[in-house]
Amino acid sequence: MPRISYFGPTGTFTEMALARFEELGAFDAAVDRIAAPSQPAALQLLRDGDVDGAVVPIESSVDGSVSPTMDALARGARLQIVAETELDIAFTVVVRPGTTRDRIATVGAYPVAAAQVREWLAENLPDARIVPASSNAGAAEDVAAGDVDAGVSTAIAGRRLELDVYADGVADHAGARTRFVLLTRPVPVPERTGRDRTSVILQLPNVPGSLVRAMSEFGSRGIDLTRIESRPTREEYGTYFFHLDCIGHIDDPLVAEALQALHRFAGVRFLGSWPAVSDQGVPPVAVDDDAAWLERLRRGEEPR
Image (cartoon, rainbow, N blue to C red):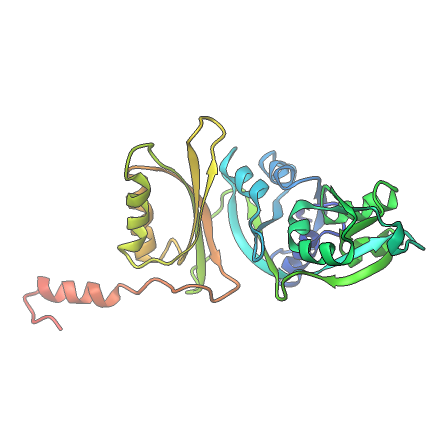
């Protein structure tokens, strides 16, 4: 039975994403779900060999990249993304039985969740103070423990703790989605599907033009970058890791060329190539026609 860690406790959206991976057949057998208190902790269990895989959130359509995940991927032993999934995100505000609006002075919310319901809270609970929670499910646990009066959580977590639903389907932005990834220790990459995503973390030399040079390796080959983000290395002021996602697979010749070119002057941490769940972006062009054109030149034939 594969052991898979996830950003817990039980009842988080990340556990729902793990369930989605199970439904999609990502595992060969039933899974032993191991809850971890944070994204870095879930990944560290994988690095330590205590689990066989890890599921963490990586990007929100509302709040952008999930910083704890991004920072944890840049440090420690390299891990590899092998699959992704997306969930529609809307929250359930839970309270202890009998709690009315006039008795809600504090609301527990995971910071990413708080950012996605800020307008709703301002309109519906304008006098309540927001208290950071460890996770979405953790917000429900804080309510059950009496630490806060209400929690921005999930319906599953509320039912588990026998809490009442104060409001359901809460979201400032209709159609909000979060992308989750399944990681393992380094393995052969999944086969190219023609609808793939590749991710790397770059550590560039601190010299003028290095970022422009890195971007040009993708741009000159017509490779579509779908995410570019810098995160501080926390080692020296003004030094950064650059997280890049592109459309394509390491087995696409143009993507392979770009990675090889980057390796000549930058530190490249390969996070994987895997099937994408959406049609975002433009896949790299095939080079078969170019190769055939070049071969005709070699043979002294008229190019077409």
